[in-house]
Length: 182
Length: 182
Image (cartoon, helix red, strand yellow):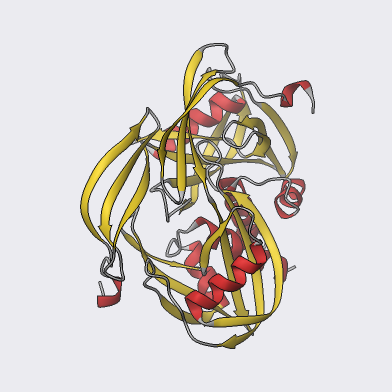
């Protein structure tokens, strides 16, 4: 670690201000990079966000669902949470099957990202799933989804024109196209 | 709006559980899609995240900084916050100049995304900035940054191999490459 990469923040104290089964929010008293005292509110995610890009020939499966925090309907790749300590790939297989009924013969990790690194520690990991077999959708009580199979190039168009706004979906769709158009 | 796109969640009550200058956290008592009672913790972001892709010939400018919520050093495109009601482009110009000292002759909106739509309402918007002129970096007290100019194809490599993990940077870099390699 170079001198420049050393933490320029100092944590003086830390208190939990909110906790539920999915997130914990803490507020730290800090010394900022300029030496001034301040606070830092950090949102800890108890789940890693898992995305699955299910591709069959030149088609992709998207799911449509209402996103409560935004109050909008959103078309996305299948996504779900992986609890701390659980295996990402196992969670990906479970979420794909729950949300779409699909099982995949082939899995490959495509990428990962920190979704909002100035406020939260949320990590997202996404996988490519191919060799798909259709089974039965098994939604959780918090889910109401529509599954749609469409040409990948149509999903790419939706990602480029703002019809898809979910960050994990955008990263996965852009990256898959990039890796397959070389 | 089709029947399927109607909100499947019902909000019974709402209480603020945490508030600071950047985020507000509320917990709603809800009826879930399956009719069961539950809670929903929502993180409201008071800023829109703004990203800037500064491109000069075939080079890009990245900034390196320590990200407190993750405890990691991160290489990213220049980013900053735009307060509610402020103009995204104006914020982009301000943040680019503050973080890198650069001014751009040409600006174009590239895309936008919801970064974590199961928990937060955070929106990110990113711009392409070209026709760059170097001025003087003017950091805020919460910032300690290194600026690096490098070939765009090197940044793309970093985005693909996991050296860049910031979601806004990944979306902007992938999308820019995709639009310019057609």
